Image (cartoon, rainbow, N blue to C red; front, side):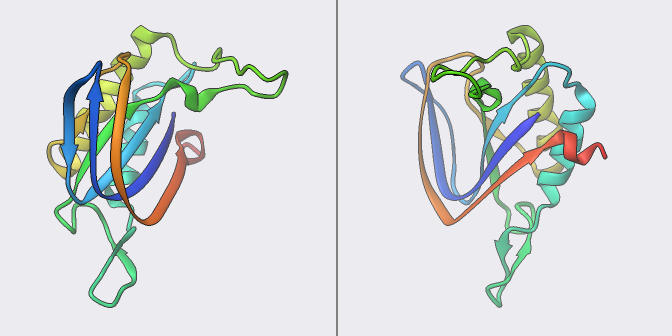
Length: 150
């Protein structure tokens, strides 16, 4: 499972043209589920992300987590994170989990993260989504659950 984490001042997602979720200060997360991922991957990512100290303290040092700053998360599914671009100019997405499995793990990840930081907002799995955000920093981290399994 890959998660692109962005620290934001605000973020909003529209699914099929309809407002789906919004947050103020917090984390905007793009989540990609790959073939072979399971609930352990979702739990590992949720645990790490909930404790990730990327918000500034009173001294301007990144020393606080999203929970410490009473922030929230906006989670958006993104199968293109597992694109294979090695051959040719048209990526394939064969490494992405099948939709039924990916949706289940996406929803499980949201429940795991919500249990740790409070309610999370989200996009709609499989929908055509548009996002708006105001990045903070910018601070962007790409996290792979395979690294956390080691």
